[in-house]
Length: 155
Image (cartoon, rainbow, N blue to C red; front, side, top):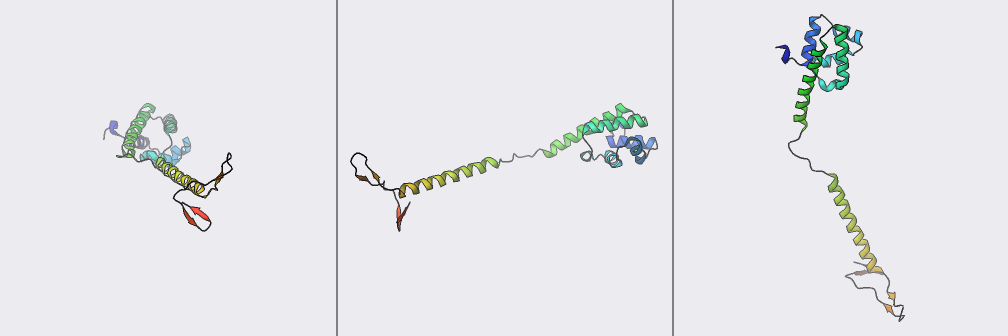
């Protein structure tokens, strides 16, 4: 494998091994947790901190152990770019999900309209006859298709 094709983890491991460094020593001198260094070497990018922290970690390691900082950061950017491309391809669904919330709102609004119309029709069927203010005569309530049950009238 040429150095140009190495991932960040592979490059970091090879440089660390060239210098005879153990992860524990790097952890002690830089205060970067060994588990983070393991994730770095294994290219488990989803387990690593955000890019800004990684850049800082790599700078500290470069300065403390005389690694080529520019080369290390270049590998970081290449690895993150390819990782983001892969994640983007995996996360983009081949179909578009239908929005559920507008459908729920529409069904709730339709149910509310039906209930209001039902209550309004009940009130129309059960209202008392009105008195004509001019003549004093009683005007019967409008007749709808209502069903009488006992002393209540329902539509």
